[in-house]
Length: 206
Length: 206
Image 1 (cartoon, each protein chain N blue to C red):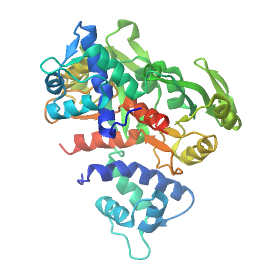
Image 2 (image 1 turned 90 degrees about the vertical axis):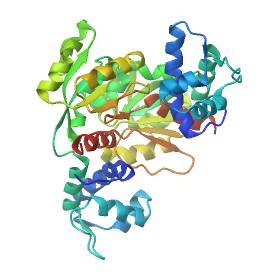
Image 3 (image 1 turned 180 degrees about the vertical axis):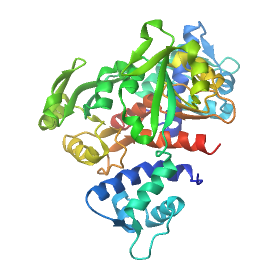
Image 4 (image 1 turned 90 degrees about the horizontal axis):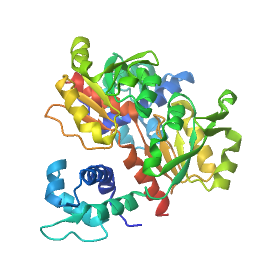
């Protein structure tokens, strides 16, 4: 896999969506200036971004083939292979994610949910919901390296430790807490309370 | 409202959760070194963060009263007043959010959902789901300034324009696209595909 900077990687899903839309509209080539104008990025930025992901250089005055660029970006983003994940915490948010199948578009499939509450066990939205005691064995048997945390904040660190113990190497954390993990494990925080705080702050400072 | 830097603001929900836990455990005071050690932040960082939000300076060798600090952070984060929001796009993710009442803990209440699909209209999880034609009037009558976008990427910009037209000043965007908005309007992106890409990138580069 190519090494792409974090900032470039974060912009890629936006390029991808836009290129898919262009393709649906029957367009076949795209140039850096056109993308720059659409996104209000600088041309230099767009040229750098595309150079770091595209397998074929853009042609002067013509640009890039949209179809090729889409595949290149999908490869860089890892959407092409299906990455299995476990989800811990099948409460309101967790069960919403079990039901929401949209992550599969981005290469993520939730193989099982886990919960400490025995009343939640069984299955939900065709995904098995298993007891916490089975987490480690399940991850090892299924070779799962991605864990999603949707428990309340107070249980977050304990669940994180259990995921690490089960061999998980990347954690998508929706609990609004700062997780402590060993080196080599990536935590990606989805800090929704902080996002709301940013939005309120903007509204209240106007 | 105090002016707090974006980076400080983003850390505040983490402090808040931890202080609430400490309070539940019967603790009444906290010092910067204790927080620094827990979060693996530097002491200077923690001192700066607390100084920018606390109404009462910390006492040397004692620290801050936890109860006061909690109220100060809640005030800065805007969680104390209830901010009403509208949500556009009552598909899988949107309806999950209508059902998930957890945002109210952070001061956000979804007053109504909107959808272009007439089959979705009526109510869901006790929240009214209204046609797009009523968006503008609803926001103006209810004085709503916060909009949540949970439509597919392709509909995102159109919905964004409709929210701006309806007087919305802050947008929480879950559609994986880059929205173009007039000056003075804040967009907070919850870029889930990018988060997944970061996680996959980590897993595949190991």
